[in-house]
Image 1 (tube, one colour):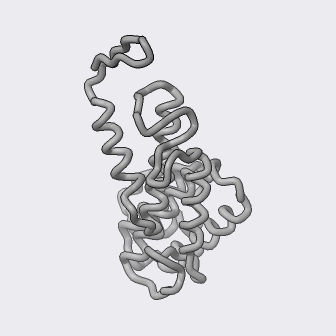
Image 2 (cartoon, helix red, strand yellow):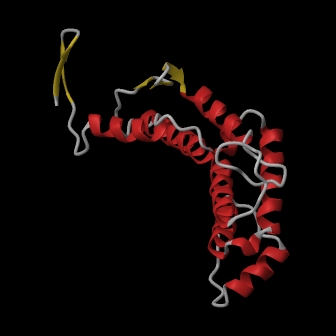
Length: 191
């Protein structure tokens, strides 16, 4: 797509137009929701966009250097990631699980277990991007305790938890391996 800017003619060739990339990024990052799931999804998207942009894998009108154009104007991408993780951690409940909107409902359910498993995977992927490492590690440890204690709530989500843990390079405990062998009789390996 040719463009004439500041006395220079530039041409960008792409099979995926920048305006479509911006729409995908914008829809995921700035949809106006602050559920725990969205906060983590936004942080992961910004992390990935930042890496792709840094490596010149694509261009976006939403990104200028280390800043991204948000609903509130240009913000440093690292600051947005930090803020999203902090907001998500505020949704952690006393039993270690995560609620969608806050930290007040500690009742267990298959939905809450699955949500907490998703948050676990996201926090592991964002672990090196958060400055308050001790706070995040404590939250992850509490979440692991919840995911183990309530593992019978959702077998598929429990398997997802074990897979996320293994993908992050964290060894499964002896008890987790034993539990895995009872629900995975074919002995499919993870990690």
